[in-house]
Image 1 (cartoon, rainbow, N blue to C red):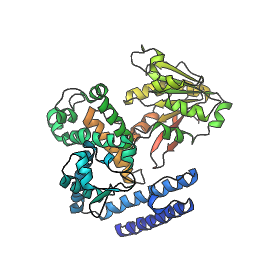
Image 2 (cartoon, rainbow, N blue to C red; image 1 turned 180 degrees about the vertical axis):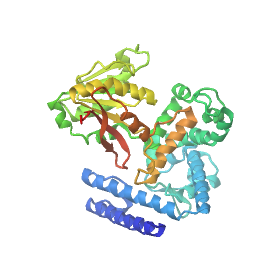
Image 3 (cartoon, one colour; image 1 turned 45 degrees about the horizontal axis):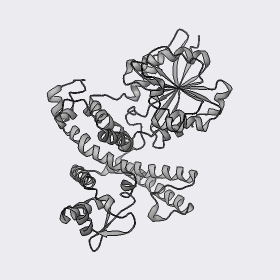
Image 4 (tube, rainbow, N blue to C red; image 1 turned 135 degrees about the vertical axis):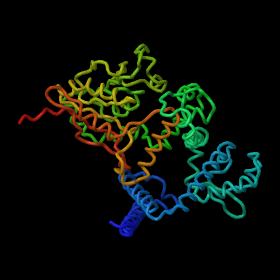
Amino acid sequence: MDSLTELETYANELITAVKGLAGYSLSTEVSQSSASQPSSDPGAQKECHRAKACILSNIAKIKMLVSEPTGFLENLTTQMQILACLRWLGEFQILACIPLVGSVSIKDVAHLSGVPETYLDRIVRLTATSGFLHVSQPSHVSHTPLSAPFVTNPSLLDAVMFLAESAAPAALQMAAATQQFGDSHQPNETAYNMALGTTKPFHTAHKEQPKLSRQWSSYLNYAEGLHAVGSITDILTQLNWSNISHVARCVVEVGAQSTATARGLADMHPSLHFVVQITDPASTIPVNKLISPFDRELGISPRIKVTNRVLGTRQVNTDAAIYILHLPSSLSAIRAELQVHLEALRANGGIMLILTARLLPEPGSMPNPEVEAVARSRGLSLLQLANEAEIEMVELLELIGTVRDNVGKLIVTNKLRSRNSLVVALVVEHQVDVKA
């Protein structure tokens, strides 16, 4: 297909998606001014998300076809300045000084915040070109559907501050870090260390600094395409959980960091019991210390049991219908976990759900190229911050196919996807070899 034909195809798909979104908005009595807000009807909301994903996907593809070097550089320049502006707005708490409803004079906001009016005027006029804040005459500023959530949800601003103060400086030191450290895997020989002039590893720094830890968590959740626990739980409902009780009523979550996923699934499936295995290398932390303050306050369901388990050790819960595996950070550790669970899967005919939201997607597999770009940006960020390399989906699929015993092997029988088509879980079963 030549580029002009592709352009026409994407344009037609874009028009169809826009008309579809407008139709869903009208049918749910959503006004044009609030078209970006979710509908209360779950069915309509799902269709709206699908239409928006199609719109964004086709816009990205059209931009790739028509972009030229000059436009590419101009866009980079604009995005750089917008990031700087957002950090400036966050540093001086400007967004909170603007009412969520109505407008206020730029002069009054500058006076209240203690910043130069000229700076504020120039900054909001630039961000307004991207739909972030709106400037009206004479020199008044108001929130938009894009900027208002940064006031009502402070975690969004935390993500911006981490991007501006940690991720971006580290990214820009990537070349210098390569010259200085080469192919080092040491956590304190990174672009982050060079950018911030410290020898302390990033993960040590954010564990010691509550503000940095909060910003890092927000950055992962909002800027790096990782799915929140709630959305992963919803995606797992793509399985037919009603059939589980006919085989066994136990679900084991392996390598968890909290009971959040188990709590969500337990609420939806009252007949099931859950074992949450927290990974602790030393296996010396008392179980009651593994339970989050949130869990202790509300109380965990008696159907949820929390235990320790060291990665790669024998799995004592061998009668589960489903094992939910949070992936370790290395292929060798993943192989060990799969091998450990192989016998249980074979004996009980159970399945394993391998959570893969952190994996890099197969190249070119995403309908929207920007979804893959976000995932690969996250992979580079981890490399620049901590010398950690995220695993490719292709590597995991190849690895699963090599795990076997004397009667069969592990196979992938299904892929559970999010709304943006990202694979967030693999369904794995034991398959007996077919004899010729």
